[in-house]
Amino acid sequence: MNKELFLKEMQEHEFREVQAGDWKLFEAYYRDMNDYWVSPMSFTNMIAWRPSFQIFYKRVDDYLLCMVWDNRSDNRFLMVPLLGRYEQRAVMKVMAEVKSFFQKMGVPLIIESVSEWMLPYYQNLPDFDWQVENDRDLCDYLYQAKDFETSMDREKTRYYYRYFIRKFQPETVELSSEYVGECIELCERAFCGTHTCEDCGFGCLKDTIRSVLQDFHLLNAKGILVRKGEKAIAYCIVSRLKGLGMYQFKKTERGYQGINEYLHKECYDRFLQGVDVINYMEDMGLEGLRKYKSRLAPYTLFPRYRLELKPQ
Image (cartoon, rainbow, N blue to C red; front, side, top):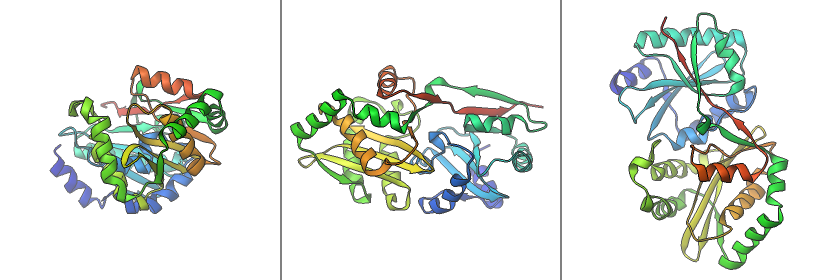
Protein backbone atom coordinates (compact mmCIF):
# COMPACT_ATOMS: atom_id res chain seq x y z
CA MET A 1 0.00 0.00 0.00
CA ASN A 2 1.22 3.50 -0.76
CA LYS A 3 0.51 6.66 1.18
CA GLU A 4 -1.84 8.10 -1.42
CA LEU A 5 -4.13 5.09 -1.15
CA PHE A 6 -3.94 5.15 2.65
CA LEU A 7 -4.95 8.83 2.80
CA LYS A 8 -7.82 8.16 0.39
CA GLU A 9 -9.09 5.35 2.61
CA MET A 10 -8.84 7.52 5.71
CA GLN A 11 -10.95 10.20 4.01
CA GLU A 12 -13.54 7.75 2.72
CA HIS A 13 -13.92 6.18 6.17
CA GLU A 14 -14.21 9.61 7.85
CA PHE A 15 -10.98 9.52 9.81
CA ARG A 16 -9.47 12.85 10.84
CA GLU A 17 -5.78 13.59 11.29
CA VAL A 18 -4.88 14.28 14.91
CA GLN A 19 -4.27 17.96 15.68
CA ALA A 20 -3.29 19.71 18.91
CA GLY A 21 -6.81 21.14 19.18
CA ASP A 22 -8.21 17.61 19.55
CA TRP A 23 -6.81 17.28 23.08
CA LYS A 24 -10.12 17.87 24.88
CA LEU A 25 -11.79 15.12 22.86
CA PHE A 26 -8.95 12.68 23.54
CA GLU A 27 -8.79 13.59 27.22
CA ALA A 28 -12.20 12.07 27.94
CA TYR A 29 -11.12 8.73 26.46
CA TYR A 30 -7.82 8.72 28.37
CA ARG A 31 -9.73 9.32 31.61
CA ASP A 32 -11.89 6.25 30.88
CA MET A 33 -8.87 3.95 30.45
CA ASN A 34 -8.70 1.02 32.86
CA ASP A 35 -5.05 1.73 33.71
CA TYR A 36 -2.01 3.66 32.48
CA TRP A 37 -0.83 3.81 28.89
CA VAL A 38 2.74 3.56 27.60
CA SER A 39 4.58 6.73 26.61
CA PRO A 40 4.02 6.65 22.80
CA MET A 41 0.29 6.60 23.51
CA SER A 42 0.33 9.96 25.28
CA PHE A 43 -1.35 12.75 23.33
CA THR A 44 1.71 15.02 23.50
CA ASN A 45 3.81 12.26 21.93
CA MET A 46 1.25 11.81 19.17
CA ILE A 47 1.59 15.50 18.33
CA ALA A 48 5.36 15.56 18.73
CA TRP A 49 6.08 12.76 16.28
CA ARG A 50 3.58 13.78 13.59
CA PRO A 51 6.33 14.45 11.02
CA SER A 52 7.26 10.76 11.30
CA PHE A 53 3.97 9.12 12.33
CA GLN A 54 0.74 10.60 10.99
CA ILE A 55 -2.18 9.51 13.17
CA PHE A 56 -5.80 9.51 12.05
CA TYR A 57 -8.76 8.86 14.34
CA LYS A 58 -12.49 8.44 14.47
CA ARG A 59 -15.03 7.51 17.11
CA VAL A 60 -16.27 3.93 16.91
CA ASP A 61 -18.85 3.01 19.53
CA ASP A 62 -17.25 3.82 22.92
CA TYR A 63 -13.69 4.09 21.60
CA LEU A 64 -11.31 6.25 19.65
CA LEU A 65 -9.81 4.18 16.86
CA CYS A 66 -6.41 5.50 15.71
CA MET A 67 -4.62 4.51 12.51
CA VAL A 68 -0.99 5.39 11.82
CA TRP A 69 1.02 5.95 8.67
CA ASP A 70 4.76 5.63 9.22
CA ASN A 71 6.42 8.29 7.06
CA ARG A 72 9.81 6.61 7.53
CA SER A 73 8.65 3.76 5.34
CA ASP A 74 6.72 3.64 2.08
CA ASN A 75 4.22 1.01 3.10
CA ARG A 76 3.91 0.80 6.89
CA PHE A 77 0.34 1.15 8.08
CA LEU A 78 -0.74 0.10 11.58
CA MET A 79 -2.95 1.03 14.52
CA VAL A 80 -2.40 1.88 18.16
CA PRO A 81 -4.53 0.48 20.99
CA LEU A 82 -8.12 1.56 21.32
CA LEU A 83 -8.63 4.55 23.58
CA GLY A 84 -11.46 4.24 26.07
CA ARG A 85 -12.79 1.92 28.76
CA TYR A 86 -11.88 -1.67 27.92
CA GLU A 87 -14.69 -4.22 28.13
CA GLN A 88 -14.25 -7.53 26.32
CA ARG A 89 -17.50 -7.55 24.38
CA ALA A 90 -17.12 -3.95 23.26
CA VAL A 91 -13.49 -4.49 22.22
CA MET A 92 -14.51 -7.62 20.31
CA LYS A 93 -17.14 -5.71 18.31
CA VAL A 94 -14.74 -2.93 17.28
CA MET A 95 -11.86 -5.25 16.50
CA ALA A 96 -14.03 -7.38 14.20
CA GLU A 97 -14.56 -4.25 12.12
CA VAL A 98 -10.86 -3.41 12.29
CA LYS A 99 -9.90 -6.89 11.11
CA SER A 100 -12.18 -6.61 8.09
CA PHE A 101 -10.77 -3.17 7.31
CA PHE A 102 -7.17 -4.38 7.28
CA GLN A 103 -8.09 -7.42 5.20
CA LYS A 104 -9.75 -5.15 2.67
CA MET A 105 -6.62 -2.97 2.58
CA GLY A 106 -4.47 -6.05 2.01
CA VAL A 107 -2.01 -5.32 4.82
CA PRO A 108 -1.26 -7.21 8.06
CA LEU A 109 -3.08 -6.04 11.17
CA ILE A 110 -0.44 -4.62 13.53
CA ILE A 111 -1.07 -2.92 16.88
CA GLU A 112 1.85 -1.12 18.49
CA SER A 113 2.32 0.34 21.99
CA VAL A 114 0.03 -2.11 23.79
CA SER A 115 0.18 -1.95 27.59
CA GLU A 116 0.40 -5.19 29.56
CA TRP A 117 -3.08 -4.85 31.04
CA MET A 118 -4.52 -4.49 27.52
CA LEU A 119 -3.03 -7.77 26.28
CA PRO A 120 -5.78 -10.15 27.51
CA TYR A 121 -8.48 -8.08 25.79
CA TYR A 122 -6.77 -8.59 22.41
CA GLN A 123 -5.52 -12.13 23.04
CA ASN A 124 -8.99 -13.35 24.08
CA LEU A 125 -10.62 -12.22 20.85
CA PRO A 126 -12.10 -15.20 18.96
CA ASP A 127 -10.42 -15.92 15.61
CA PHE A 128 -7.47 -13.63 16.41
CA ASP A 129 -4.10 -15.38 16.61
CA TRP A 130 -1.38 -12.86 17.45
CA GLN A 131 2.38 -12.85 17.27
CA VAL A 132 3.42 -10.88 20.37
CA GLU A 133 6.73 -9.05 20.72
CA ASN A 134 8.24 -6.95 23.50
CA ASP A 135 11.55 -5.10 23.23
CA ARG A 136 13.31 -4.48 26.58
CA ASP A 137 14.92 -1.35 25.13
CA LEU A 138 11.47 0.21 24.64
CA CYS A 139 10.09 -0.46 28.13
CA ASP A 140 9.15 2.66 30.07
CA TYR A 141 10.62 3.29 33.53
CA LEU A 142 7.87 3.70 36.13
CA TYR A 143 8.58 5.14 39.58
CA GLN A 144 6.22 5.53 42.47
CA ALA A 145 5.94 9.27 43.02
CA LYS A 146 6.95 8.93 46.68
CA ASP A 147 10.15 7.11 45.64
CA PHE A 148 10.88 9.76 43.02
CA GLU A 149 10.42 12.49 45.63
CA THR A 150 12.72 10.63 48.03
CA SER A 151 15.39 10.35 45.33
CA MET A 152 15.31 14.13 44.83
CA ASP A 153 15.83 14.60 48.56
CA ARG A 154 19.04 12.57 48.75
CA GLU A 155 21.99 14.53 50.10
CA LYS A 156 24.00 14.21 46.89
CA THR A 157 21.04 15.19 44.70
CA ARG A 158 20.26 18.23 46.86
CA TYR A 159 23.92 19.23 46.67
CA TYR A 160 23.96 19.18 42.84
CA TYR A 161 20.65 21.04 42.68
CA ARG A 162 21.95 23.82 44.93
CA TYR A 163 25.36 23.79 43.22
CA PHE A 164 23.75 24.40 39.83
CA ILE A 165 21.80 27.38 41.14
CA ARG A 166 24.78 28.85 42.97
CA LYS A 167 27.30 28.28 40.20
CA PHE A 168 25.27 29.22 37.13
CA GLN A 169 22.52 31.52 38.48
CA PRO A 170 19.98 30.26 35.93
CA GLU A 171 16.98 32.13 34.61
CA THR A 172 14.00 29.80 34.33
CA VAL A 173 10.81 30.52 32.39
CA GLU A 174 7.76 28.38 31.73
CA LEU A 175 7.61 27.19 28.15
CA SER A 176 5.30 28.60 25.51
CA SER A 177 5.31 28.82 21.73
CA GLU A 178 7.46 31.95 21.79
CA TYR A 179 10.48 29.86 22.87
CA VAL A 180 10.46 27.37 19.99
CA GLY A 181 13.42 29.07 18.30
CA GLU A 182 15.59 28.90 21.42
CA CYS A 183 14.76 25.22 21.93
CA ILE A 184 15.62 24.36 18.33
CA GLU A 185 18.93 26.23 18.62
CA LEU A 186 19.67 24.26 21.79
CA CYS A 187 18.99 20.97 19.97
CA GLU A 188 21.39 22.03 17.21
CA ARG A 189 24.17 22.80 19.69
CA ALA A 190 23.58 20.00 22.19
CA PHE A 191 22.71 17.15 19.82
CA CYS A 192 22.97 17.83 16.09
CA GLY A 193 26.57 18.98 16.41
CA THR A 194 27.70 15.53 17.54
CA HIS A 195 25.20 13.30 15.70
CA THR A 196 24.05 12.63 12.16
CA CYS A 197 20.45 12.62 10.94
CA GLU A 198 20.67 8.81 10.67
CA ASP A 199 21.07 8.68 14.46
CA CYS A 200 17.50 9.95 14.85
CA GLY A 201 15.72 6.74 13.94
CA PHE A 202 12.25 7.89 14.99
CA GLY A 203 12.48 11.35 13.44
CA CYS A 204 14.16 14.73 13.75
CA LEU A 205 14.39 16.08 17.30
CA LYS A 206 14.06 19.64 15.99
CA ASP A 207 10.83 18.74 14.20
CA THR A 208 9.60 17.12 17.41
CA ILE A 209 10.09 20.16 19.63
CA ARG A 210 8.66 22.41 16.92
CA SER A 211 5.52 20.26 16.67
CA VAL A 212 5.00 20.37 20.44
CA LEU A 213 5.70 24.04 21.07
CA GLN A 214 3.92 25.64 18.14
CA ASP A 215 0.54 24.73 19.72
CA PHE A 216 1.77 24.25 23.27
CA HIS A 217 -1.16 26.11 24.83
CA LEU A 218 -3.58 23.54 23.38
CA LEU A 219 -1.86 20.50 24.92
CA ASN A 220 -1.89 19.03 28.41
CA ALA A 221 1.86 19.65 28.59
CA LYS A 222 3.92 22.01 30.73
CA GLY A 223 7.61 22.74 30.79
CA ILE A 224 10.51 25.04 31.52
CA LEU A 225 13.32 26.65 29.56
CA VAL A 226 16.54 27.34 31.47
CA ARG A 227 18.99 30.04 30.41
CA LYS A 228 22.49 31.03 31.47
CA GLY A 229 22.60 34.69 30.62
CA GLU A 230 21.03 34.99 27.16
CA LYS A 231 21.84 31.42 26.18
CA ALA A 232 19.28 28.58 26.49
CA ILE A 233 21.01 25.61 28.12
CA ALA A 234 18.12 23.22 28.88
CA TYR A 235 14.44 22.54 28.47
CA CYS A 236 12.13 19.93 29.95
CA ILE A 237 8.52 19.09 29.04
CA VAL A 238 6.17 17.04 31.21
CA SER A 239 2.50 16.09 31.26
CA ARG A 240 0.05 14.68 33.77
CA LEU A 241 -3.33 12.98 33.68
CA LYS A 242 -5.20 10.53 35.90
CA GLY A 243 -2.40 10.21 38.47
CA LEU A 244 0.27 9.66 35.84
CA GLY A 245 3.12 12.16 35.52
CA MET A 246 5.36 11.86 32.49
CA TYR A 247 8.77 13.38 31.74
CA GLN A 248 8.46 13.50 27.98
CA PHE A 249 11.16 15.66 26.41
CA LYS A 250 14.41 16.94 27.84
CA LYS A 251 17.53 18.43 26.34
CA THR A 252 20.55 19.82 28.16
CA GLU A 253 23.81 21.37 27.09
CA ARG A 254 26.93 19.72 28.46
CA GLY A 255 29.15 21.36 31.03
CA TYR A 256 26.47 22.39 33.55
CA GLN A 257 26.79 20.07 36.51
CA GLY A 258 23.55 19.66 38.42
CA ILE A 259 21.33 20.61 35.48
CA ASN A 260 19.44 17.29 35.44
CA GLU A 261 18.75 17.46 39.16
CA TYR A 262 17.51 21.00 38.63
CA LEU A 263 15.16 20.01 35.78
CA HIS A 264 13.72 17.08 37.71
CA LYS A 265 12.95 19.07 40.83
CA GLU A 266 11.71 22.23 39.13
CA CYS A 267 9.31 20.35 36.86
CA TYR A 268 8.13 18.09 39.65
CA ASP A 269 7.54 20.96 42.08
CA ARG A 270 5.86 23.17 39.48
CA PHE A 271 3.75 20.67 37.55
CA LEU A 272 3.65 17.14 38.97
CA GLN A 273 2.81 17.51 42.66
CA GLY A 274 0.14 14.99 43.68
CA VAL A 275 0.62 12.40 40.92
CA ASP A 276 0.85 8.73 41.88
CA VAL A 277 3.34 7.44 39.33
CA ILE A 278 6.17 8.94 37.28
CA ASN A 279 6.85 7.61 33.77
CA TYR A 280 10.39 8.49 32.68
CA MET A 281 10.16 6.90 29.21
CA GLU A 282 12.51 4.26 27.76
CA ASP A 283 16.29 3.99 27.56
CA MET A 284 16.46 2.92 23.88
CA GLY A 285 19.10 0.36 24.82
CA LEU A 286 21.70 3.06 25.50
CA GLU A 287 23.91 1.82 28.32
CA GLY A 288 24.57 5.23 29.85
CA LEU A 289 20.90 6.15 29.81
CA ARG A 290 19.98 2.76 31.26
CA LYS A 291 22.35 3.20 34.20
CA TYR A 292 21.14 6.75 34.78
CA LYS A 293 17.46 5.85 34.85
CA SER A 294 18.11 2.74 36.94
CA ARG A 295 19.78 4.83 39.64
CA LEU A 296 17.14 7.53 39.91
CA ALA A 297 14.85 5.57 42.23
CA PRO A 298 13.37 2.08 42.66
CA TYR A 299 11.54 1.36 39.42
CA THR A 300 9.52 -1.16 37.45
CA LEU A 301 9.73 -1.65 33.71
CA PHE A 302 6.46 -0.91 31.93
CA PRO A 303 6.53 -2.97 28.70
CA ARG A 304 4.98 -1.98 25.42
CA TYR A 305 3.90 -4.84 23.19
CA ARG A 306 3.62 -5.18 19.44
CA LEU A 307 0.85 -7.46 18.16
CA GLU A 308 0.71 -8.74 14.60
CA LEU A 309 -2.16 -10.91 13.43
CA LYS A 310 -0.86 -14.18 12.01
CA PRO A 311 -2.01 -15.11 8.48
CA GLN A 312 -5.02 -17.37 8.47
